[in-house]
Length: 273
View 1 (cartoon, one colour):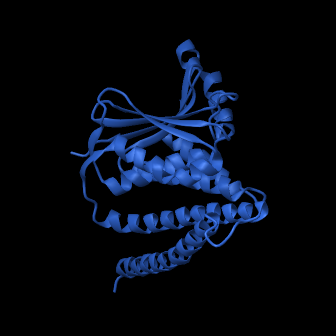
View 2 (cartoon, rainbow, N blue to C red):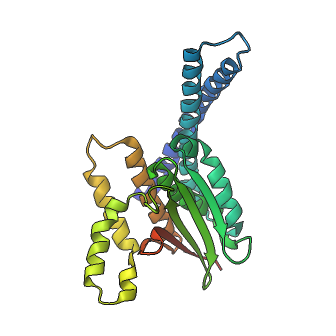
View 3 (cartoon, helix red, strand yellow):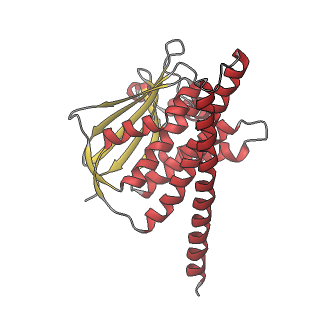
């Protein structure tokens, strides 16, 4: 066997083992969630206030763990999909709405709302590999939810331009305004861009390119210490993964800073022919 075929075989076994382990994790998690739900309904007798509080915590964390396991399963499936990429018409708005629904546990935990908006035609139909597109959008939205302040609204705006899908993502907060997650990562770079610019238009609207964005994220992840939270690390890794998936599809993910709209992620993906 060649080195390439050995690596391919090892990855196949790794993915199958990961899928088996995660599937086995789902069964007890489902049982725990079911039993917690039964207790919460007080079928076998009334609960004290403290018992009810503990049951709700068990229920909530079980649902959260289940969502993480399902994400691992999706990532394992994605590697298999990459070997046999298949392009089909995809209703992107419906897909985004389904992703937002699937992230309900995350949204509830962080107390964040999500809205999907579409410019022009109501439904954005384009040719994509649905599995890869779904993971690109999922990880982007997941990353933003993880980093958003309680009470924030995550908004996605879909539009078409020159045979490309454009997804603008930003965050609004009733008290903090458009305080974008990870904004501290980009402020220094954007300040440097503005200082070099002589145009009043560019001063009002500057951007970090995909290559710069990827470099900033990678450097931040590599310098994270033990004091960093797991949520923060996962959010950055999900954002980096979304960058890589966008590149894999011939697209880009970059950040825009505007005096009018604050920080925005702009995901641009070409429609397949």
